[in-house]
Length: 74
Image (cartoon, rainbow, N blue to C red; front, top):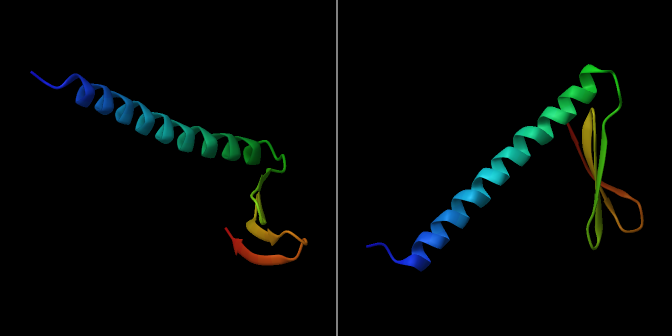
């Protein structure tokens, strides 16, 4: 009764949404677990023209020459 392509699309959408939610939950869990153990948490993401550094206290955005552009304190 349902179109096979529509069913496949809905399955993939549901699967992708579930993976996204699980990634967000377990990502924050690992950060909180590291903080509970007293370990410093640091995560770097490098984009084309920017670098984003997340640590225990803040999120910092740097340009490609290394200058801080934005600091967001938690």
